[in-house]
Image (cartoon, rainbow, N blue to C red; front, side, top):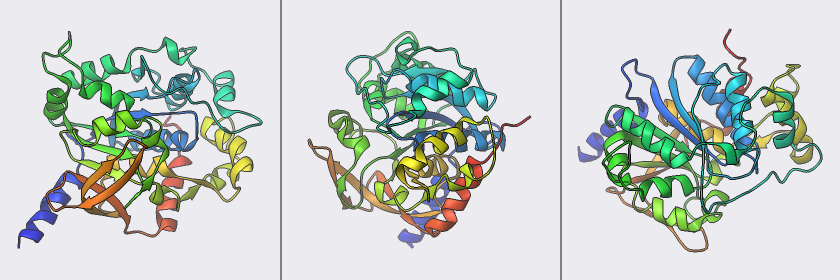
Amino acid sequence: MKRQIFYILLLLLFSACGGSKDNKVNLIFDTDMAPDYDDVGALAILHAMADSGEVNILATVSSNQCPTAVPCIEVINTYFGRPDIPLGAVKGEAANRGTWHGGLRWTDELPKKYPHKIKSTADSPDALKLYRKILSEQPDTSVTIVTVGFLTNLKNLLESGPDEFSPLSGKDLIKKKVKLLVSMAGTFPEGREFNVYIDPVASMAVFPHWPTPIIFSGWEIGSKIFTGKRLIESGIENNPIVDTYAMCLPQDNMKGRDSWDQTAVLVAVRGAGDYFNMERGTMNVFEDGSNTWTSDENGNHYYLKFKMTPDQITKVIEDMMLHQPAK
């Protein structure tokens, strides 16, 4: 009976992640846009779900100081008709990672071709201040945060003090306003993954101390879901998502690119239930950025396991990556 009650509560929590009056998910998207291009696919499907009325995109912020990271985010927001989504970037000591793809570098090409206003990531507002401002304005326990990059911004938020936006500490503000954190991070049940080891200090600060439930989409999930082939075969022109995959897939694998970040965004908006099962417990992070997992029915962490097949989820994600802006 206890187990049945637990699963009912779990379903209610994670199948309806929203908190706004119109039943849309109120969401902040935190990305390391640049090293890889699954972030582009993730932001594309987020806009597709916004067009279908499933999500309010409250802000898009960068955990990466790469100069073209925020311009690329703004290109995509503008392309999908949402140029006014607030933008922010990590300040202070933080990673600065450019794309590792040679030849045509998509992070350079998109800002050359498509409209945007911010010239460089350094010109962006402080992501910490943006987090605190937006959270302070939202109803209690109504915000979902999805992070598909480094944990630096969330560490800064968690450790922040009272300011002009809220008298609460960062941890208390999160506890009051945030419903759920979804993170593309880690490898389960154990391993060492990029988003964790690039800033292990931030990862160790955030994951053990974050005061809401966390759902992890691990490396092993996205590594089985390959998207992009249908985009470059679609014939769609003047589309920054298609352009990015057309530039990059020939350098990787023409059958498709791993879809780590898209899975996190999908679950953040629609919940895990239709697509994935989850195991409950605690993610343990170490100084070298590696992680292990401890199963615990009272744990505050959950990691995804396949329920649908990878091919089925690939179709769901790729259908949304092909979405064109609403007229």
